[in-house]
Image (cartoon, rainbow, N blue to C red; front, top):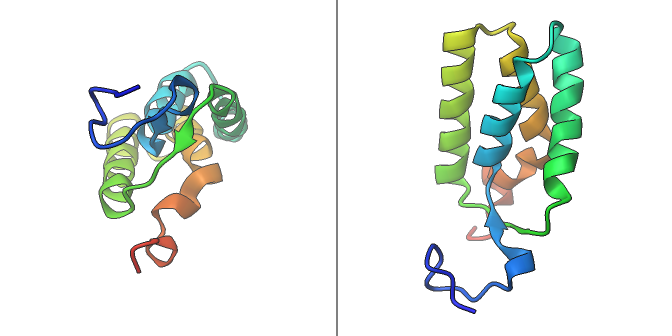
Length: 109
């Protein structure tokens, strides 16, 4: 099956590639539901686990993905506040897969 978004790869539907950016955005939005940053951070970890229940294949663009995640976290932190529940829920949502964007884990090296 050829996917339009990924023309160079053949992915079965249960292994569509997912990046950390959706984890960041969805958890930032969910973080607005909480009142305490620690609770929001824990909810972000749980939200990451819930999003990982959807069958997918983790991909990593390393530099590009890391930049996009940092940009999103920066936007959430600067617009909502660095101590906001939105920021800390997004952080919790990204943390479990942070090794995917670390430069020393780049398979191209």
